[in-house]
Each structure stands twice: as C-alpha cells, then as structure tokens.
Image 1 (cartoon, rainbow, N blue to C red):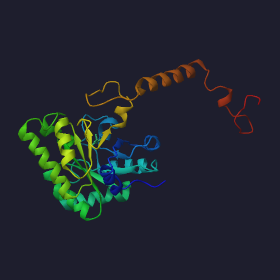
Image 2: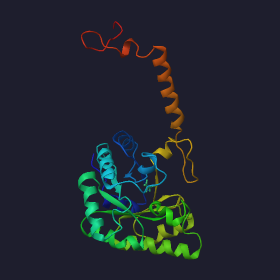
Image 3: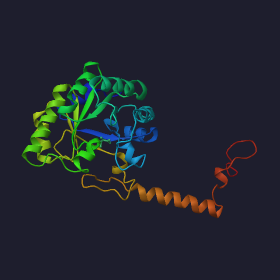
Image 4: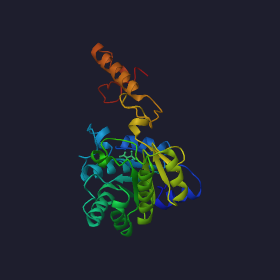
Amino acid sequence: MTRLTAPDILRMKAANQRIAMVTAYDFSMARLMDRAGADMVLVGDSLGMVIQGESDTLRVTLDEMAYHGRCVARGLERAHLTIDMPFMSYQLSPTQALENAGKLVQNGRAQAVKLEGGVRSAPAIRACVEAGIPVVGHVGLTPQSVHAFGGFKVQGRGDEAADRIRADALAVQEAGAFCVVFEMIPAALAAELTKTLSIPTIGIGAGVDCDGQVLVCNDLLGLDERFKPRFVKRFAELAGAVEAATGAYVAEVRAGTFPAAEHTFDTSGKLYSGGK
Ligand code: KIV
C-alpha cells in the first residue's frame, strides 16, 4: 500500500472527504492507528505530557521527536506522517526552522512538520515549504505558549481575539502550509475559517465543521482515567482494561498458575503442546 502524501491530504478537502488524524508515539500504536484507517498520524510534542509525564510540552527535544518519528514510521503503511517541531527548534530564525525540519525528515522520517503560531511563524513555514518540506500549521491554543496564555485556555473569544486567529490562519496558508490545526477555538470561528481557507482545517476542540479532527491517541483510548477535557471523547476505556489485565497477571504469578503447560517448552525446545 502506498502512503498518503501532502497533495493527497489537500485533495481531500476539495473532494469533501473528512480527514482523521491521530497522534502516535511508538511502532505498536502507529501500526494499529494505520490499520484502523487514520489518514494522518502525528508524532505530537504532546509526547512530553502523555509519554514523558511532564505537565507541558516545553522540555521535548528535537532528538526525541526524531526518535519517536522513526518508531512510528515503521508502523505505517498508508497514513501520512507529520512530526511536531518542538519548542525552540524553529523560533530563532527561518534558517533554524529549515535546518531542524530537515533533521525531522532525515532522522525522523517525517513527510511533513508541524509548527505552532500563525503570523509570527509564517517566515519559518515559508522557508521549509520553499525547501520542499510540507508544513502543517497550528493556531489557536498553541501549547508551547502556555505560559503566555496563562494556561490551556480557549483562544479567539471576542472580536479582537477572533481577528487575530483569522490573521494567523491566513498567514499560515499564505506561507504555504498544506493544512492547519485549530486547537480550542470557538466552533463558529473554525467553521467560518474552514469555508474561507483553501487548505484543510483539522480541529481539536474546534467543533465539527472543520475538514478533519485530531485527537491524542491516549485520550481517545481512555488510557488516563484522570484526564477528560471537554473536547475529548473517549472511544474506549483502556485504563481500566490495562489495570485489570495486569492485575490478573500479577495474581496468576503469585498463585503459581502462570505460566501453564501451554506456555512452557519441553526439552526439545519446542512449545510444550499439552500432549497433542
Ligand atoms: O502535540 C500534539 O499532540 C498536538 C495535537 C494535539 C494537535 O499538537
């Protein structure tokens, strides 16, 4: 099977096909997300929170993003792979952005990179696009600016704030991004911009009228029973299932009932077949 490309994703908007994007951070999860039909897989810097256990995304490094990118890429047959550019890997200059985006392509196997910020990140986006690296924009709540926002808060409420989001979204498109993530903005604003822009919009906490949606895989699978923001729908409750399965394993180890005969090798090195 061939992998989807940035032009394929762009064409999905014209064809009125909704785009399903999901994050993944390792081979096993990426393989399952790909088999389930996700169009785009994102190695998000949310890995700082869901994989590394930090309270924000600010300490994730470029090398860590590339490492997780390689792991995820091996699991994909069809889905397109985008890797986030982490905090301070693109803010200094367009040259820095291009150099580091190139590393994510070469060392992380990214087909595209994602940069946070609209107007302020446009020169960095343009530098990458002109060098042949597809870019996904990200406006609204940009988690790398959590300290400036004073927390993970809805953006674009009120006329002035909405105008800033409009300008950001347009700047991202004009700089050459092939799609844009809208995070935590009012649904009506996301709907308006989805009509205005020619590139696909991918929402997270931005309502149903975006061209696509993205969720963090751990959130949609319910892998952390403590975390349930309004915009997350849990499509499974795996935290309980994982705990129950591991608890059953622990109990069987303690009781001496695991491993049983069928999990055991005989002296010829073959799996003991229980006499069959
Ligand atoms: O880091 C991430 O996972 C993201 C998505 C939530 C869009 O940026």
